[in-house]
Length: 182
Image (cartoon, rainbow, N blue to C red; front, side):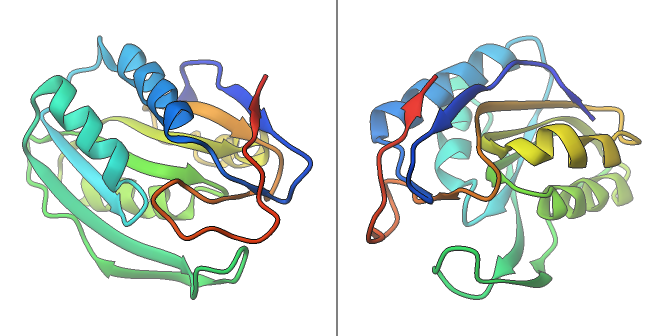
């Protein structure tokens, strides 16, 4: 997998970052710009996180075909309460689909790796993978491990290792800060 853009650093002193709706819009526009030359006819949405971004992309490109891949790594809405990866639902894709996989944040890449495998097992093509945020270690360590997949990856922002991201559509967390884009 190859990162095709340069995500902006998004950071604060808080362990929890809370991007604003304006920052989500800017990040979505950045992803849309980087998707212009990528041919896809279906979105595979990693739910719940990828829902908002996938709707923005769907409306912009007029792609109405969506399939949902439900995997979870955390057992609650508390920061970093991870458990093992559990797949609840595989995406319904078929041979000939050209798929864009959409996620909100990628820490180690386990859920997108499972979604990629799901698409490839169905003999469909992964046109690209995108996320609003990526952990800095995903960009350095984990992306190399996923390098056997020859596809493009796009992310708007990178954040310091293991920062918890609380999106505007989620419940507030004590001590969170709206991060700064650098």
